[in-house]
Structures are given as structure tokens and as C-alpha cells.
Image (cartoon, rainbow, N blue to C red; front, side, top):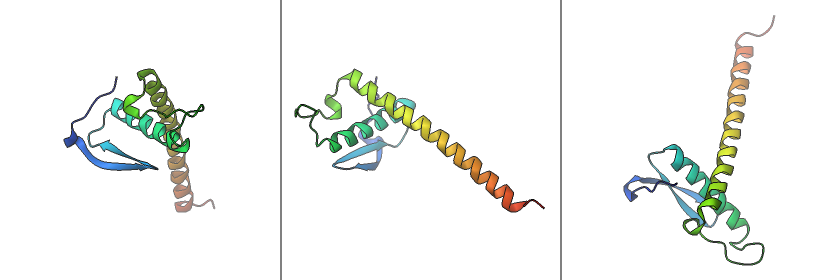
Length: 106
């Protein structure tokens, strides 16, 4: 389900504690979902010191089963959609505040 990218598309890096994750230059919906899923998974693994609840080593993203990756990607999508809503609310509030400042009630 994921799209692999050639190394030429790697332009910037995202730092997650304990891991360095490449961010593709050209985004598409699947790449964004997979990247955010990977970031979330890596952050979780870092918080668990890369150990599962029973002390076993957690696999790196490339070794994670597809259905587990899909769960992380769905979780990341939900957070992204929620953040988009918050951003829209903030933009609306900012526009309202700007309007109020420019045209105060008399």
C-alpha cells in the first residue's frame, strides 16, 4: 500500500527523538499518511525504549506488518484531520479579531 520514493526525492529531514526520518520532497496522499504513521510509530517506540509490553524488541517501520502500519497511518490521519480543524478555527478567530480591531463597535 505504500509508495517507495527514489533517494533523489529526499530533500529534508524530520527529527524524532532517537530517529532521523526522511521527508519526501514531492508529497502525495499515501506518502503523507505513511510518513505521519512512521513518525507516530517511531515516537511511540522511542517512548517505550523500543520494547514491547512483554520486553521484546519492537520492529523498525520497514519490518512492521502491513496491518499494523495501516493502523498507525489511520491514527495519523485522524490526528491530521483534527489539527486541520483546529487550524481552521484559529484562522476564523484571527479573522474575527482582525475585523473587530479594524471596526470596533461604537
